[in-house]
Length: 317
Image (tube, rainbow, N blue to C red; front, side, top):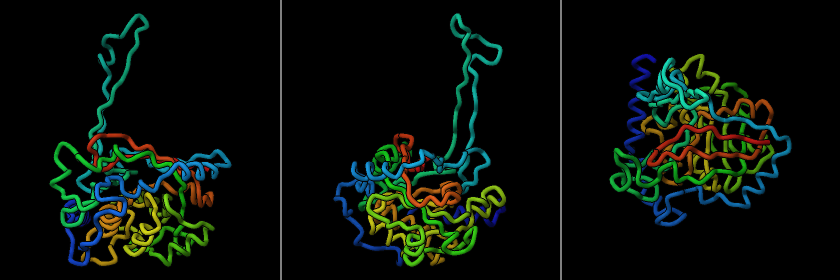
């Protein structure tokens, strides 16, 4: 990654992580949350047993789709994020064995950022002027030893109806060009094309074809991308969706619709509406099979205090 791209990514990421904003982002009416002044789960409150049983009825073929990409040292990531794994053989290759059956084994030590590869952004990831979901100030929940509220280990299993909106078909370009933002007009048109109606408790995934650039041009995959616009984020949040994802690294369009802002869709979804963000979702096979709705299953790893988590959700048809 060249220095100009690195600087761009670092600056944008830092602004987002610190909750920096312009006056156009600030608002004083987004908390307390619609789910209650003490709520910590956000749109996960829209999950239900009825939603699980209805989504399960979508399974007709028994076909499964892993939505996570393989994550390793070469996975494109916002700087300075990185991944490193060390494999250890207990006792070394010619060392002592265990028991009369001479058992041997390996362990592994993983040192990595949690926000790399396919990931879920928890509600503690992005705020507005150091205020996070439900009006929670950063000093009241975050510390170097982990989050005291909003940790991703507290998110309940997300088992619900998944909806795929294929923006390559809707916009007639594959991949959708970087900086292209889709909002309510494009979302409604894509949903109509797919024959689906987005509803409360759904997980919405966008297919843009952008994942194909991750190997051919990893720096460009991170530095710019098509994605959800601010008005579209507000629209979907108003419908009561639990999570929104895409086959891009940030979900939202980069460059942003308003170049003065930093990750406005993140702030809108996470801080203001409690809607979870799913990044680097591998939607390629779903789109190839014209799969527009499916059972979506995510049981994220339960790392206590975590802001984000590397995930591999599964779509089932």
